[in-house]
Image: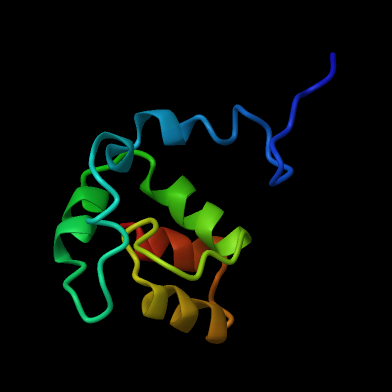
Length: 96
């Protein structure tokens, strides 16, 4: 049986978390705030989201450079990448 993949190379099953993600039920202004604005509200929503880990993995795998993904801001994801800690253990710690 053939598996259909998205343009990111992930299967639709691997992206299913997006359908139930809390961010899909709110506006983008929380997750893509103006420069210098607070990310607190987005991080609070992420903290309650069941898809948080998958979201962070997606952002790291796809080099998402803007917005809050998986509960981490652009700067926090960049620090994670630079430290070389973008591993399963680091992602688990960041989403705990």
